[in-house]
Image (cartoon, rainbow, N blue to C red; front, side):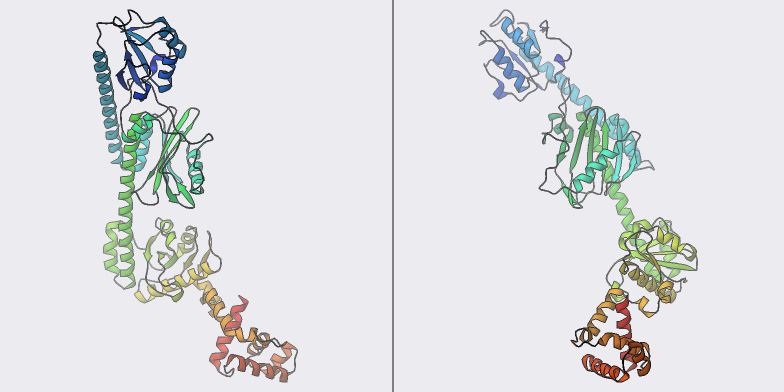
Length: 532
């Protein structure tokens, strides 16, 4: 084969060759896919060839080989001129060179290139696997992946927070895009940059499955999101690609295929990712997902064991509890200790700070059937640990491991938590100690919402009474004066006979005897609850 003068300019011969096709048709493009090296003897070539060349270029033909000595003794000048003007690589094929030899040569080169890509991919996968076996685990895989792609890599949790990143990682762009997608409605377009969605390039499609490439050349970039799963208030990507000047980023989810990803990893480089690089990225994703699932399985097993330890402690089996906890590497605090109770979501925050476990027993009526995160900590650091949870926490009085004391402390912590949550405690620093509740009197031990609902129901006949007399305030003055008519009447500024009439109406409306100490106690609690 011989090149045609003027067709070896820099970049012209860099087009990737995907296959070899032979055609003598005036328009072979309906039978081509793009990337072919087209061979012809020019049987039907006469006159101007600009339209013929334009169709080949539009179809993405990689180059044109013209066989001389059959229909033409040399390449037609009109074809040479048209190809040079359109930038189509053109070369001459001598008569003694059969087209089939060119096809075999290209096929062997493609096979060799694919074998080389597969070998490099397998070698990279081996290095990633060895990294996964290191003590650093997922972090080691991220570090290795960055080296394999010649760029950077980062690991993010399911909330999009960066957990580990290599030097130079553009995590801001990744976090920002994930955050945007979380708030995107399914009906809204999920484009990453203006200009509309783009189809993935052939190289990207092969990269997703680890396919091969061409003899030479690169690929066409394609940005966008592929698929999606629900997360938060919007759609999270099944895969995500970002491209900008001098930077290409791929983001993939991690997890076992559930409705929500359990994390993400991102990879960035200054050049488009090759098919081999896509294969390596996919391999890293598999290793990271496996490590994530294994760690979650181990974590869940450890949590179940700690819950069993807590149950043993509450039943008085302290030595058995220590025996179960020992293999987990945990320790129980020394006495005196305090019990902390928080919502189940706070368990992850408590685990690094103390012995913590999920507790799902019934307990107090207002908290029944609601799983709680329970922690046992030395009494001296109870408040400090509670403040680190970033959630409402109830703290018990000091106790020991005796089952009566420990169960009582758990109940105290739960009641303190109810007060913390019921008083608007939704953020860091909302810690309520049971000792503080006890100092607030009996009402401090009651759930505010339940107490107010009870008060509203009990006092409803009085508040609905249509007279100008304020029966509720009259009842309050009567009870505050311990049933002394003169003192209560003086407080209200009315005659004692007026007060006696009002109390008679209260008795009739409520259907209760105000001389009964139990009735007085209920009414006093109801009136106090309306003040809270």
